[in-house]
Image (cartoon, rainbow, N blue to C red; front, side, top):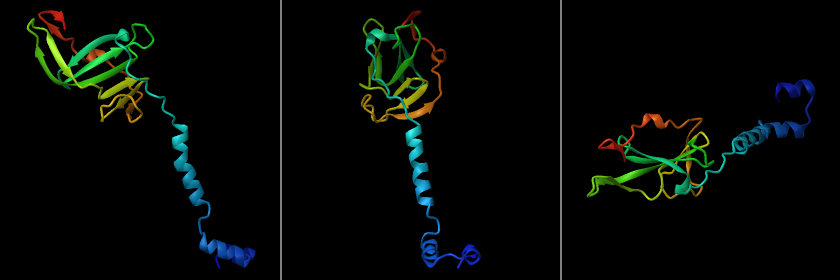
Length: 152
């Protein structure tokens, strides 16, 4: 018998229960704790890549070999959606302009102050992973693409 039963006089059924279930509430509490984060942290659904009409700018990043597309979903001049596609190959056209061959779907998305990663590069379909939250996209870190003094 444990000390509390000796002092308070436990019945044999309670003593048997205490011996077979030393932590009866632990499995319940543990399952609730594991279930709560999934319920309380509801990520908003990532919208699909917008049409070209809402595209504000295209940036080629030589360092990451990506073309980054900046969009305004609200129709203002404020960037609120960004995607980045990997470049397979780039070359110059017969006129000297850069030509980029890109992956069909983006590798990353930035929306609603959250960076999303899509390692499958299969478009927005629910398998995207949150890479980093509470992050702002800073387009000023990229140098503009210039060719003979003109924007690419």
